[in-house]
Each structure stands twice: as C-alpha cells, then as structure tokens.
Amino acid sequence: MAGAPIGNTNAASSKKWQAAIERAIASYPDRPNDDGCSDLIKGLNAAAYEFVCGVMVDKSIAFFREFGDRLEGKPNQAIDLGSDPERPMIQKLIREIVKPNDQDR
Image (cartoon, rainbow, N blue to C red; front, top):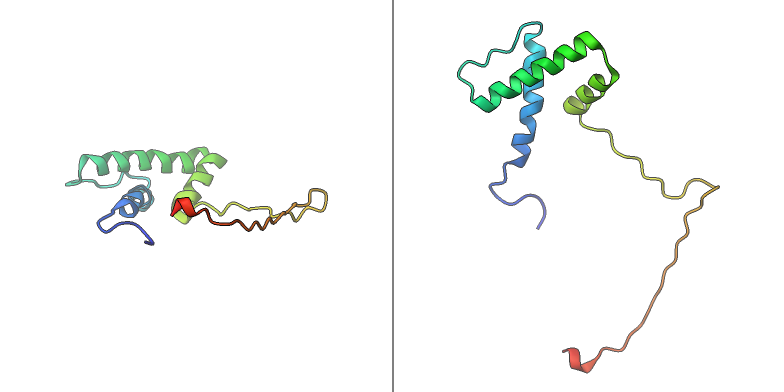
C-alpha cells in the first residue's frame, strides 16, 4: 500500500505553521488578524509574528534558514555514494544457494 491511510490529515496540519508565517508576512509590521480563529491558530499567528519580526529586525542567519525551510521546504540531503577517490566505496555481493528444509513447510 502506498501513501497515507484514508482519512490521514497529517499533511494538512503540517501546513498550519507555513500558513501562519504567510499571514504574518502579509500583515507585517502589524500582527495578523485572528478574529474568529481557534486558540491553536491564534497561538501559531502570535509565534509566526514573533518569528517574522526576528527575521526582519535581527537579520540572523538562523532565522533566514528556518524561514526558507518553512516556505520552500528543507533542501535534500546529499548522499555520497563513493565519489571520493580517497575513500572509495567497497561493494560485495554474496550469492548463496540453499536447499530448502522439508521440515519448515
């Protein structure tokens, strides 16, 4: 079976932080309007506003990195498959033929 089970809402909930950041950016320098929102969304809006203020005011590389990761997604991790001639990757393939045991049937 590929993918998440029917009814799984994990992907939708992971976008709430991204949406809160987008609301904070759209309303900056003011706080996002969260009238009629749930307490969860109000909390996310407050945290996102503080986060965006940190990006705009502190100009810290950590804020920018987190900002990019939230809006664009984290970059893929590079996997080295032995491209370094100083450290070659060693591969070994073992083929073993076994006789089935009649008692295991």
